[in-house]
Image (cartoon, rainbow, N blue to C red; front, side, top):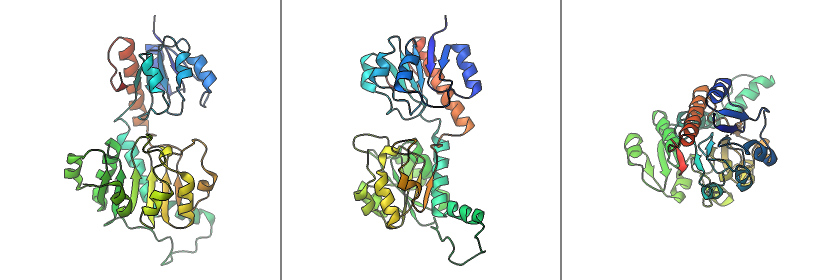
Length: 319
């Protein structure tokens, strides 16, 4: 008999076919997240759970699944999972690190370029029918060569973003708990403390997980330390940023631009952020390439297979 698994959101059809071949797979057929009550009902008889980043896998959901042996998060992050509750039950928790590094780094650079060269404003001007032709002061933006890119965090994604800065002629600073010597050798990046990073960055890009120390790290105090006219980019976690403080910094021209792919209360976005000037707002598409999503699925499936066959998982958050 095939082991029972539950998938909280239908994945692309070839992936679902593979899941049905390998497991007794049940899943959410609606194109929207499940409520906690629906999660509890769905996972009730499952040995394995493939969850999305926006699924709250808390103690109540875990307690509703007495046979559960693995929670495979279809994401790099795992702050949606109650690790204490899972650990207390001896349930493995896994994620999909590494496979979405390049896609997320590419998108980070799309946001940097869009903010620096005011791409959305240009698109809107052309489509409005109000464009009157070339003008010497029209939509002047930031030239990248010679500027400083600051990386808050230098894990896989942060380093990939930093590596892409070299051909643009940017100086790279990074803040990290430990030095990244190979990254420094390959890019000329310099490790800096938080204060220096904030003060010297023309572009500040966030690449840290959400922890008690990092939650709300970009706030009115840190924004006041940043260079006037700097660009803020967030493709990491929305909870890192106090969105009301960013709005005020944009409205007062303290902040030059903001490019976000993640938000504190997704899918709800701060209403003033939606209309704030000089913003580029995307719908959490950092990993949204066909290749990356296939690799994420393959990693999640491999983790479930290994654990349900009594083997260690491929990419454990902890075991």
